[in-house]
Length: 161
Image (cartoon, helix red, strand yellow):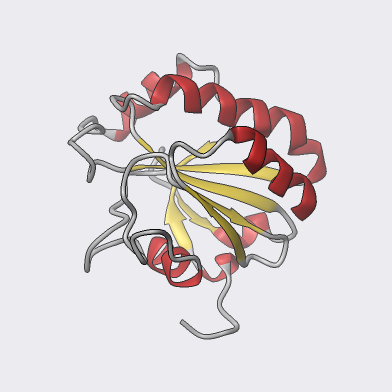
């Protein structure tokens, strides 16, 4: 990855199958998270992520959720079913198509995020609901374990805003 790399250099596919240029989020603070509908963290994380989205969206903040089935097979569903499941939480944040976050065939966006913000296990993501905070310049400035307190994450979001 070059030093001029940023979130804005990537294109991803949204939950509806449309290609999305992440330049769309230029000037935003983003919290990027790998999600799974059958994970033990789902019922606490989806509402907390939505609360952050609602609280800070007017300050150019966005949650970007990427379903992933690499951890315990906890996201086996197709995109349509994932979207229907997420709607039970009345989420408004952007959802994307299922990706791999680890391994040689990991999504390029996740390879970038991990190269910039390694964790306890190096660049390897340990589980669902790992979060990356990206500043307004498109550069990762924080990485959070699935069990990290949302109070701490929110403090960092406020600083980035």
